[in-house]
Length: 374
Ligand SMILES: Nc1ncnc2c1ncn2[C@@H]1O[C@H](COP(=O)(O)OP(=O)(O)OP(=O)(O)O)[C@@H](O)[C@H]1O
Ligand SMILES: [Mg+2]
Image (cartoon, rainbow, N blue to C red; front, side):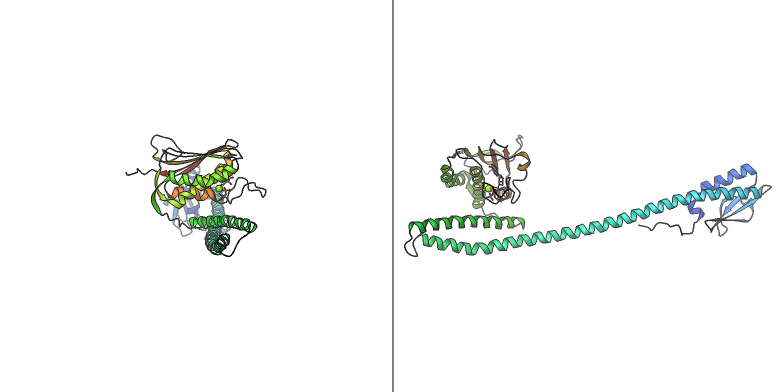
């Protein structure tokens, strides 16, 4: 950006006052006083007027600086020179004021632009720093999870060996303790694995081990796993498989999706409620236009507490739990749905929910349909 003019710069008449205004001035004086006149710059070059006015003879100053020279000939030459000098002074005064206002404006713009540039640079530095921190955090999570898992598998292994009596006979009380140790260690292992999975998601390392599998089979086996704990709370899990649901995907990850949705349905449904699981063919996405491609749908519905509209948008975010108070009735870390969504989407499917508080929830996860070859 150019530096603006300041009050101290010398003024050039030709730059300040347009030649049309000078021509007009000369014409009106000629008309009023009937004499010939001209305006010259400081080097004697004519800016306006005619030759007949003769050589310049009246210097004009503005704010103490020489500005231009006037020439006039004829009967009223002196009056014409005085009138022209006064009028020029007015013209220059206005023009100079305009010029200074523009310069001030330009200077203000320059300062604002400079401040904005500096502000942007500061923001950019902060973003770079945050990205670096985020990368460090993901690396740290991945390393920590890995380091925690290794000793934990030993704890589980030795506890299992003791429970099996490999280290000598175990009393009933000792077996109870070992069962609790194993249960808690499994819970911890699940949590560490979930954190490790989320950190590998964040660093973009989600690899799928694909094979053709029946979603209905995976669902049936997960339902069987959850049936006992649901049964203890009087919750019946209804399974309805309308489709074999052949999917090409990563069995472990798909099992985790099913398990996550089932675990939530059971967890957030009060005792004696209902949970339903269905595998069927349906639209791949939540919109039901006739063009939407078909997919295999896993539908998990419950008669539980439901989720309010403003919370629904957040439940797929890492670590988000609707009730995050310390007196929270339900366990978990808030990673289940984050992972489920990432896994479903990595398979080319979608996941969504239809829910409202007190009315239960219907979670739908879809996978692209593969025609079974028989
Ligand atoms: N079926 C459901 N009914 C009511 N609320 C639900 C349901 N499923 C999920 N939510 C809400 O969404 C939140 C996030 O679910 P998510 O599965 O990610 O975490 P979590 O179950 O709390 O913990 P984690 O799955 O890691 O053990 C839950 O804490 C709960 O508030
Ligand atoms: Mg969960």
